Length: 281
Ligand SMILES: [Zn+2]
Image 1 (cartoon, rainbow, N blue to C red):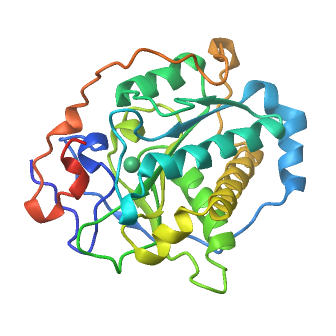
Image 2 (image 1 turned 180 degrees about the vertical axis):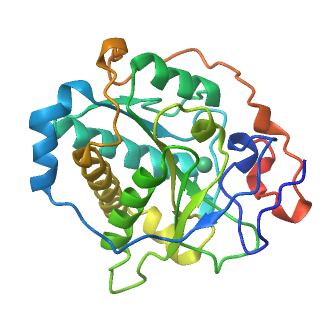
Image 3 (image 1 turned 90 degrees about the horizontal axis):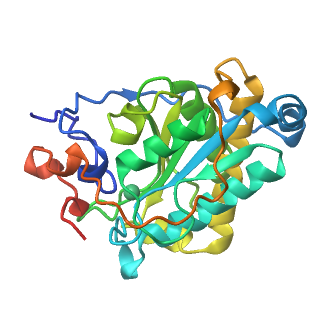
């Protein structure tokens, strides 16, 4: 099936691994609104009122045999996104929001397994964290936040929070590449609001330096967490399904790697749209 992304689109980290072969044309959505950084006051409200019923799944992409994108100077996607993800989960926990990590160190977890993990735990929202790359385009950089169904508001709020913080940097502000829709497997199969944050491009000379920096990653994590808290605090879109919620211990026990082969491993995209990471690493 032809994947008809606009040519202006660059493709994402491990697209083949996370995009269904049934991929429909993705449509870019305009970045809504202005950055609206929630402050802790709003989040605190959530903590007191709903924390026991809300579970957030944080999904660091890739892991183990799949390091994700490899950027400049060998910077690996897994080494960028895991610390961000761990910090997001930590912040949420500190705010009284239960979290589930689909992995908590560098080991492989299948895509379907990630979705199932969230479902079984009764998670309310799913936030996947990735970093991006594109061949021969060192000029491409910036933040993209993806949703499929049910995740638009969550994507918009998280995206706005990140841009509101890192996009306001005086030096090399994070470029806003927009909130977008795509049929990534973890989004498509999630029955809850689910988003995938591409925190930046490892193949950008400027962005790879930033993403390799611990302080920058911490700021990224803080902004993602703040966005999640703001979303939860709005409350209306979070269906509380506590009756089926049996939160797993956080983080989940390490499992023997399961070779869950996603149907997205062999997409038939036009060659120019197949990213570097479609080859197995
Ligand atoms: Zn990725």
